Length: 91
Image (cartoon, rainbow, N blue to C red; front, side, top):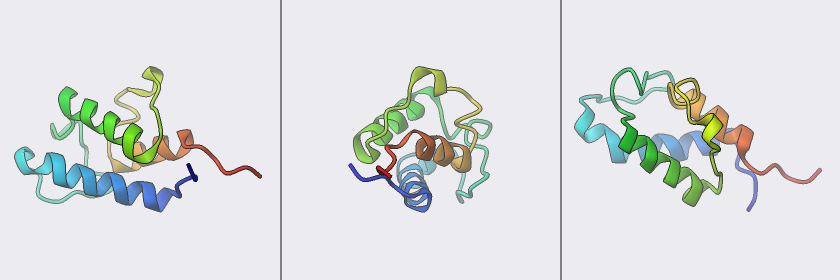
């Protein structure tokens, strides 16, 4: 699978979170720094669904050591983590 650039990862994650999780959360607008954990958008179930989406759609497996509040604070931190873990093109 080809490496995804950061903007493509951000767009995919943003669309997924908006479509799947914002309807019930009371959060109307998703920004790069929206505190997803603090505002209850990423519950344990939603985080599990998001991990499946990242693995199945983006081809990136998140190791257990990365499933922390630090990496799932907001769209920016999730995007950075996925980009860092995504397969990089051969030089």
